[in-house]
Image 1 (cartoon, one colour):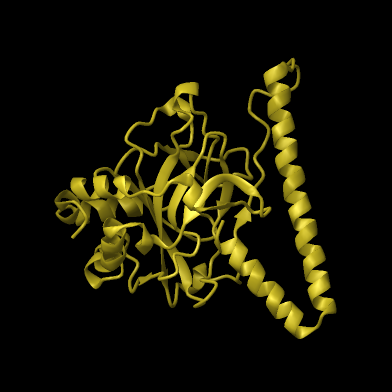
Image 2 (tube, one colour):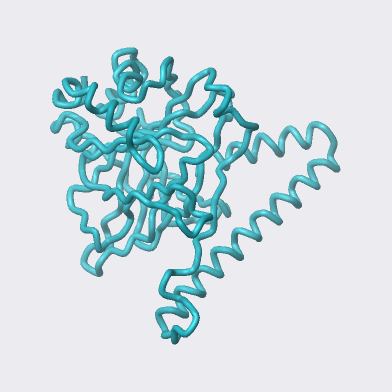
Length: 301
């Protein structure tokens, strides 16, 4: 088993922590993997250039993803073998109380994630159905592989109660080495991370993680909604920008960056609308091809 013995012997306590966590059910587990195995995953972690770094605008960005994890080396092959087995799935079921979990053989949107300085992730809820098998998405399990990480570098995983509200409550989790975060995915599981700000002498470092997503064939009726892709919320103005505040150069740069992100978001929506209209004009086959392509790109965010 690749999971540390301490985790295996503490399941009841872990489940209580998972069920009682706020702003939605989750748990943070330090030293989640066997120490030697975590070291092996880091040693075989792919270089940024090896992964797919196309962003939602289909341009090269600051995040690189490798979904074909078995090609990365023996440790990732072992990980893939273990996480699809009943022993591992049963462990996660006991911790979360979610039965009959299914492993995703495609690693759609998952696998290794490498984020460069300057990268961030707006608060969002994930796509809720598997694009291929139509299973319900139920859990994210993220293992961080960053041997050195300081709070001043940003990049903390943030779990939100509701980023659209002024009284939004946030839980912040540093992405330190061999720390696992398991959280449920539903219509209120808002999460993201603020901008990574590496110092000049650490620019070559990236925020490394392995993302594993789990599904079920069914889910409780009260949690079941129509199919949707990833839903993002554009980040609000910083708290210090209020009436009477005098803008400085740093404020202007931050405002310009926020406006640029919002402009890109609007442009992407217009492009998708244009593509959908063109697909409609091409008939039924065009619509099917459009939806298939859209699901493919959205799943890989």
